[in-house]
Image (cartoon, rainbow, N blue to C red; front, side, top):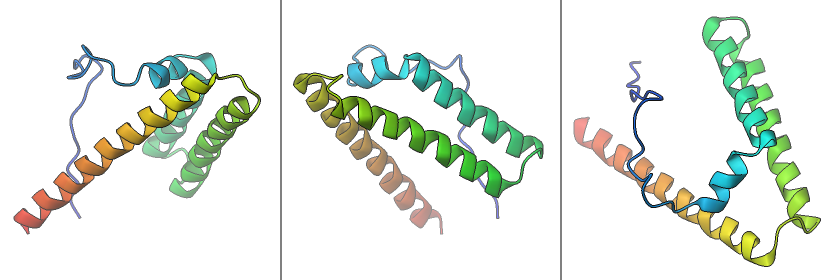
Length: 116
C-alpha cells in the first residue's frame, strides 16, 4: 500500500490568513491548555514514528489527551466561563470547519475514484 502525503512546512503561508473565519477557536488554541494538549499529541505521535512506542499505545494516548481537553472545554462551557455569544460563535465555527473538512474528504474520494 502506497500512501501519498501532503507536503507541508511551518514556513508555508495559510491561504485564509487574511480573513479569519474562526477567531474564537483560534483564540482558544492559543491558550496554554490547548498548546499543551497539541504539544503532547505531537510528542506522542513522534514517539510512534521513531519506533519508541507501539501504534496502539500512541493512538490511546493521543485519544486520551484530546478527550481530556474536549471535556475540560465542555466543563468550562457548562460552568459559564463563556458568554452566550461565545458559545454560539464556537458552535458556528466548529460547524463551518467540519463542513470544510467534509468537502475536502469528498474531493479526495472523488479524485481517487477517477484514478482507479
